[in-house]
Length: 235
Image (spheres, rainbow, N blue to C red):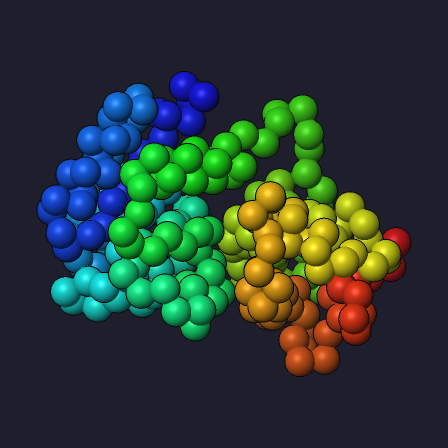
């Protein structure tokens, strides 16, 4: 746990009081490497300078929104991200999670809940047992390296988000077998997986964009109607 609390956290919110409140609770929990930003430009500058391990992003920012900020971050980093927002619409939630966010919390929120979610994500992303070597496998002309979290083809390399990685690992461990949507949601969102079925479809589409030559007509990651998905590997 101490190793997790040594991780670098970035808080992005245009309200100083909210940033300071989150900062205070994090420090009470033992976190010390906490960075602040009040807008998109500052956040990207901090990401470039300190390379945080996790970010908490407000959706509404003075020079843009958290969704566009996450898209910019994803071009250079795969860090886990939690959205904070005053809006609770399902469309916003699905958009944020579909862009690769790891969680979504609606204001007002209990600070303790945010801390627990941060710890859960850090534990899930950074506590991979050292003895478990993750697989590297080929899908046509693409090399999927789950050890490095990448997909390579020719001179192009794609980075897998934390959710994409969790889903592909679950599919690989059950390769050539049907994996139910519930099982995949549980692999990516643990015990809080209920209600993520639509978001799962978004992540599956993004994985196909990285592993398939024609994502609209997949050859390797197949949909099994009414049941789930199957990763086809010809070994």
